[in-house]
Image (cartoon, rainbow, N blue to C red; front, side, top):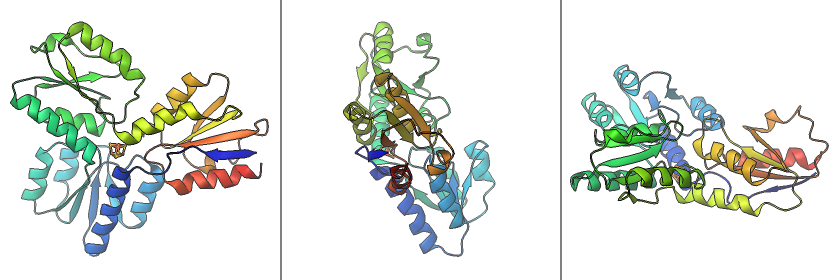
Amino acid sequence: MKVEILKPCGCCAGVNNAISLAIQAREKHPDLPIYVLGMLVHNESVINHLTALNIITLQNAPYLELLNGIEKGVIIFTAHGHDEKLDEIAKNKGLIIYDTTCSFVKYNHKLIKEALNAGRQVIFIGKKGHPEAEGSLSISKNVFLYDISTGLDFNLLSDTNPLVICQTTLSIYELENIKNDIVLHCPGAKFSHSICNATTARQKALHNINYFSDLIIIVGSKLSSNTSKLFDIALKLYPNKKVIQIKTVNDIVNSDLSSYQYATIVGGASTPLNILEEIQNFLKFK
Ligand code: SF4
């Protein structure tokens, strides 16, 4: 089978920064327990690697509860932001803090705060429960979630000219319909382009898939927002090609892909390059 990896590929700068800060924390504090509040990166292979370094991922409970359970050591905050109140709590406990929040997420927080200080309300478009949405909503009660599945009750807002910010990893295509809905209710809304460069570049690159490619393999965790968006977009753009989403080469070892001639591998922003290369090497001999 002919196989190519679509560019850009490999982890984005924000993900690489988060991983390298976690590794630095382990090197600098070899004897301390190290905890990550939530998944550092939405990729199971990366989490397994961190676990092997005895960097413990805490999840499946509210972050406040998880943080309250830590007595000493290092706490790592993840790349897509967190409730700022947690910083204060971690400091008061004497924990050593590593904040890996990506610069794109920080910039959006800055815009939100500026708007709030100017007396404006803010609409945050995102997925309920995603760390980035939770972190942004925690800034103020005047930040309202427009959930990508259920929308927003616009009666909650008193500002007819709110600032509109969105989660950095949304689809540039699904955003169009949401924008139309918001303009319908808040004609004076001011939109900030807040999808990050890594997400935008990977989504745009989907338009350049080779004409002869009959199999598109999206690689990354189902928990990864940007990877799931790549899958959704590929399905829409290429109804006549086979599109699948997998996490690693292990997911395709037993699949029957013998009818396909040309595969294009597409990695999410949190999918390490070596995972894509393993899949490429496996398929090359099919
Ligand atoms: S996907 Fe975007 S926002 Fe998230 S870590 Fe990467 S660059 Fe930052």
